[in-house]
Image 1: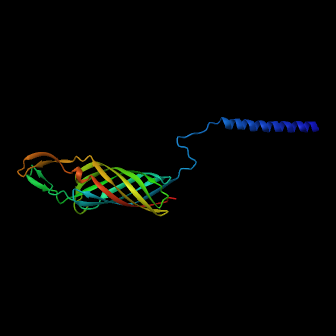
Image 2: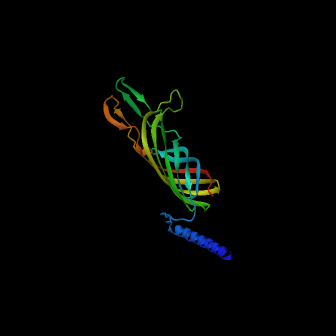
Image 3: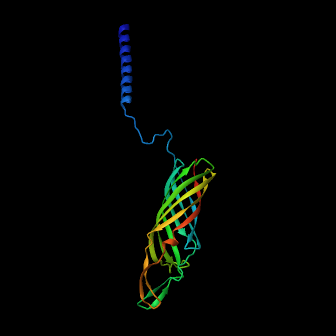
Length: 238
């Protein structure tokens, strides 16, 4: 009887050891999952958003102010990808801009129509040492928009944009940020706004009504400009 019990216990021990060895072998044979960027820290995803005020120039002498805002996904508090929207808030005009109607033989004056310029698209950037109270960053806004002439004062029944032109806008910038709270930053940036694709034209006539040829309604130099902006950023950063 004792021999039978000893034999059963021996078999049970051998079975347990064999199972452990097989499990260990299977674990050893399992290939290691590798990535290009090895890290022991988990990726932290968060987000932010806020209003923006931009200061630039229109033409040679006019100060232009645009307002808008944006938001983005924030990865490890260092990289972000999102979107933005921006629109011209100050009033600007094309001086002495008029066209000639050869049918009615009358001049049509557009000098009382103000310039409308809006754009929006992607917003990407990086932040250096975000844990510091004051730190630096770089970003770029890559967007599309339109330029047009509109009535000086908005009236729905009269609203009609004239000479609409679709453009591409690129605004790289360098930034300095201050952490005001865990949920609030203030960002000041300087950069340059590049606007391309301006090609809206009209038929130009001299004062006698003789056709001179096609001319651009808008000048690229009026919209390409150094710019500075201030953004209040709301989110959860730590």
